[in-house]
Image (cartoon, rainbow over all chains, first blue to last red; front, top):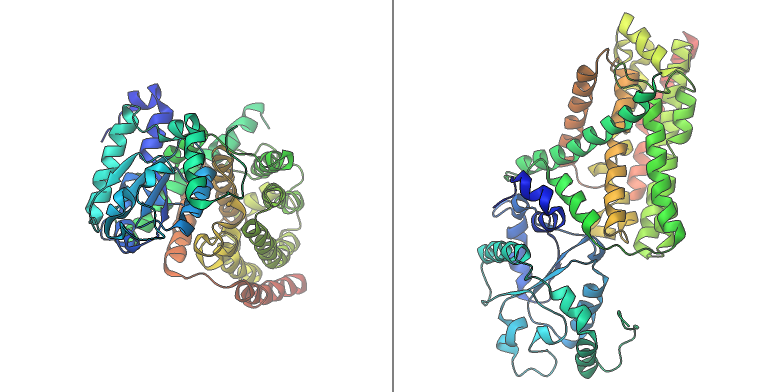
Length: 180
Length: 294
């Protein structure tokens, strides 16, 4: 952790600020909700690393999707993601958002989340332990350092493709396109 | 009055306020038996927020938040910090009472423009809470002004430096206790956290703030903490002759506030209003009557 290195703070303040102040929106769709309370409270204390839950997507920069994504919640996930200010990072938590997991042949869940919104990293497991969240956060730090966590740029550049994918499963979306 | 004091005073309030925000998170963490974030975490947060792209919701949205910070800075200029008192010789308590409302009003104007139902609920709760404690605060300040026969805050501090603190003067004990009872409401800490209520109405008026706006709102919050406590320290704990001693007193009162924040749950709106118009208002009124009769 290079939180105390003053020279780095002076050189790249925005990058360092984003690294050590990850305010997270927990989109608790499935069983991942169970892993979040111990992570943010006394047992594992995510606030040590500056990771705190944010009350609204406007105040956040980390989007954690914890569990399977049904078609109904996909709509909310897209709206929440689009409301977050850039730069923003998304992490899929558990095997369900990665490839459908145990819901792989379900009629009302989607199988690959990264078709609909860009995902910067995955935490595999069913369910992953809270320690896995911390490992993911340290990986995210490395990715931010190397400019690899650029999902929001991908979303901006390939918005037509993402929008087409979203409309394919959800029918017509009742909000205008984010980027023209 | 010196021109450098006008710059120094808000700067000092900002630094102390941001330090307090960090300290409160650390102390809360230790009470929860956690390690807690570093004490510089609010600074990191503010740097991050300024670096983010922010979404505006209209001209009033931009104007209101700046208006609120300007209002806070104006109040800071009227409050003496030790020997630094840029404008506190003019106006006094009446002006402070009047312009203390600018900061919540600016936030209300700004977040009202965002047209989010949560922020509307937050604003109405915030203004109700303000109404609740302003009544007692007005009675307390009237008692003080009657007792010392002045409206100047520097004179009140000077008179306390000669004698004893107002909190221990016989007719002012009751208003002092009333002030302590409404202080959590002025600071907006946990039993009276009804306007923010992150779990209930998603942080109320701040719900649509992101990026730069959130950073400015946080800075305004830092100012509000310093203003609320230093007014109490100046009026009832005798102020101070030098800066270090003054902020030491402010720090002690703030830590007491954090302890209250840590152990109490949040009241409902009507419970908070019932409380504020109950014992504190009665004590303040009784204190005013006793002060006038003596």
